[in-house]
Amino acid sequence: MTEETKKASPEDAEKNKAFAIIGYIFPILFFIPLVTDAKNSPFAKFHANQQLNLLLFGVIGWTATGILSIILIGVILMPIIAIAGLVFMILGIVNAAKGEMKELPVIGGFKLIN
Image (tube, rainbow, N blue to C red; front, side, top):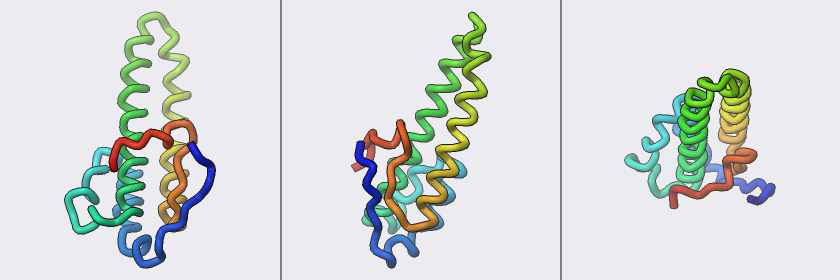
């Protein structure tokens, strides 16, 4: 995982910024840029990948805490998963609004969408 921030072309970022921001608010919509005209946009594809990572983090995190709540560890982990998800969402929105292609910390290094 690199810490370097890549800048998208200003035209590409402006044209696809709405897709990127909405996808962080509702990660289940990560696929929208992939089925529209934005499918050829490096900016939209990058943020769709980050949104998919965020979605998987939430699904896996909440499933694990649900299962672990049987032995009470999950109850302790639930607020941590919730706060981390919120922080990742805010970071993604800020990066998309700036037109940057910066990976989310910890979860952003997984490239699931080419």
